[in-house]
Length: 545
Image (cartoon, rainbow, N blue to C red; front, side, top):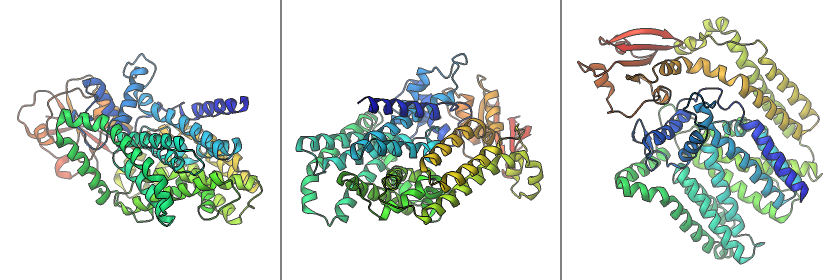
């Protein structure tokens, strides 16, 4: 009992140390991070917590649960008070840091239940020490929270139909499954219910549409659906009551459009998500491959749940391969089963049930070195930007690299140290050491390099918006989509004006400012009502004459 408590304390402490520091040290990134934080800010400012808004207009793309979490964090830390000591970015990202700690604890608890304490710790450590899973808990996007709810929905349903559970527990687990599926729907929409249902039907189908499974599953399945529906109605019902059916219909139409059409700039090749998961989830991605197709010498419950994780993995990967819009975090739900399969592999290695595979070793070496070289190259690109610019053909990228970002000249050594760690740990077949080295490298990178990267990509525009904060003016981007002007200008509620109104109305009621990229249409840059104020790092700043 004492050892178990110490493990919970250790995991909580590790999560807090790795996920919370420095989350407020860089601006939020356009689009998603700023989009979501702006919705939370507008909730606070208007006092309207039932309707998600952007630019004080209904935003029907996302349900509100994650924004409510951001609101609680922003209020708790009073992030919009300059004297609070907490940046707005801290409040926007803090919920995912807490979700990260909870996720590690969930992995430990379930791993210990299925196997033992060692397995639970391996599972938690693997997720902490992998690239994209680690970094996403430092972000302000919805997916880490959404993924945890879906995973718990699948976990509890798998237990509700497990032959090892008594009837009363099965029903309880079915209700818990529905609760978490409902929370997933409140976080990101119907895709939460779709992923869960597809996983359940896949399990049934792969097992020959077993009548015995159907008999065991039918009651918890419909109980879960009923609870998920009731939880989802907390917001959907309130929204329909307040706004009528129009906003709800637009929300559903958007979800369908998202699954069936491609957004410009996000139509990637069919294998996109497989590459993203393989490279981004290093090292657990490489370790999971063997467990996808090979069973080890595990207990019956561990083998049983491995099947659920394999089916969940393929449901996510196939669904989002079919979906035309392809963005990195769409397949992030796959990271959860990948992490279980990796822990399964490592546990079999440590238990002597499996021998070390040369193919696994090669994969760890190759992808690990690719990632380490990338980590090394990024600071070098910044430090030697002037020498690289003549070889770059994109005008906006060239202007970005001209930003005045201060480098210490040592940042690349973090990447070089990681190269050494990959070589040593893989040579020694020390997977736990590789996890720890990866976590430490990502911690240092987040503290030092991420804010410098942001200095090239968007800081000039954000600094301009911040300089206008508190002034009674209009400020809008032209020719590109952004939410930064809303959050960093801290736009107040006002009667909206279109871009055409702001550019062409004979007499505006207050000054207006505009931001373009240097790649904007030449006719727009020469608009007769605009006067160029300055040009900085690929952005053009104008005022209305």
